[in-house]
Length: 266
Image (cartoon, rainbow, N blue to C red):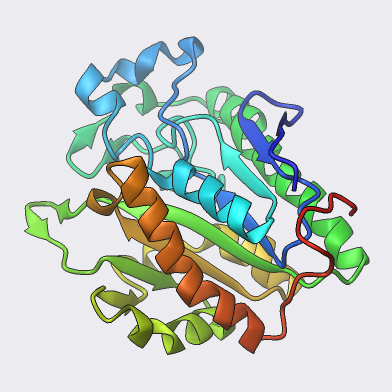
């Protein structure tokens, strides 16, 4: 399996293992807290620039582990979701939020149409185009494919603690989520819940609908509480546990590797 990182046509996207033969395509929309100098740090102080509001801590490293173990292509965002949230459509206010949880984002106030268009074209479109360039050939070649998006969430939200540790999120297509949840008893020490801490009503399933449901690909969003991803060992442990859920679920749906692990042939 290739471990080469290929940067897509835009500096806002990174692509790992594009020729992976496993039955999964991974997305990590909130992989980075980077804010390009063009945006003057959005007026945020340093604590907020590196907080969960700006990215999903641990999600990129977790997605990289899963990419390696599953021989899966991974498309990851390289720009903070406060500049543009690639898991939101352009028309959504939360795509370029003026406020995220308790954090005000001065650089997102009163954006002009031209400023919004620039972010859509420089961040969102390149991400979506990179996903399409990976998925569409697999569909044409009838390569078994499921879409899995990887996220993390804060253990405390508006002063309330969250007990859930692994969230298994879905929209109208619950095939993969159902199969994963069937495996939940094998991780009896984990609090695993459906559509928690968020669900479709929170507007978090845009990528699933755009890149998964529209192509009739089984799809799921995995949300991991970020206090379980604080060290590289934590991330390795979580990756192993997620594989205990995901690999049998893929087999249940008839999604198996189309070639030997280690091969890079499309």
